[in-house]
View 1 (cartoon, rainbow, N blue to C red):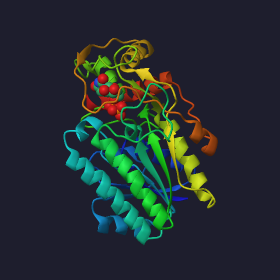
View 2: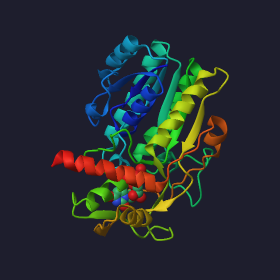
View 3: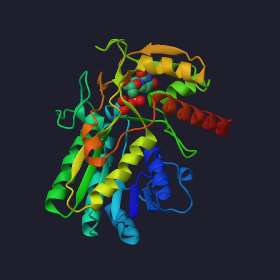
View 4: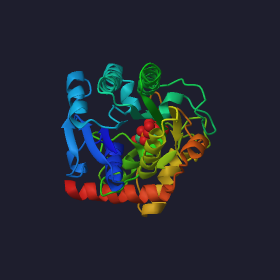
Length: 326
Ligand code: UDP
């Protein structure tokens, strides 16, 4: 299939591109390279250095490649930053999203897979969340994801577009010789590994007074390759015209606290790291774990990789990054 991947030079997007190529698909990437890395992408893809906030340029890319399906990753992703710079998040994530849908409509592209987020659930609760649980984001990043889910649903109602929206829990780990590389890095596992590798003096735990077993936040960490595998299943699903648009959680069901992750990293890689307790990060919910019954029943998908594999692969990537930088 011919697939256009927006944000394909980013962390999850670039893993997706590698997996699509391995599975025989033809791939174009649309990315403004504000946060993406061109060098994460194989040479054989078509590349559009395009910003989704520019509708005319987005349409041009769509017309030139004429994909059968779009996978939409491109967006700003840092929940904490979204509480400091809401305008940037609303502008980039929402305007980018509607421009993409409009370009798809104009060029008659009928299938989209959208990267939504567990952040749509807001506070979460102390058990795995179902897709039917209330939507109440606690940061503006989550609000942009919840809003774009609704907008895509309107496009699906009004036009001949069908979609799968995936609510990602915490993507982590690495594959294909590439990995997570945000500037600045905000995610827990890469920051802890940088501290273990002496590229940072300390790692910080944002809050130890949450109503959880050890006071630190619980998240559901899923290997990036497992996430990408679900997208392959969604492409198959959307290929059958009888299948309706759907929303699915993607996680593992298992929650781990920030402290547990810290301990597991020390044990898995056999290194120590210095931790400091810092104040809570605004907008962070105490619990987020996925109920994945729906994706497993309807898409026949299940995550396969363990937390140890996540940590080991992310550690290999961290060492590669550190040696590239030295
Ligand atoms: N976190 C932390 N220290 C850090 C980065 C993150 O304690 O340096 C916590 C954060 O508060 C959250 C969890 O780790 O509870 C996962 O955060 P991350 O930014 O990796 O992903 P998010 O859940 O925000 O998407």
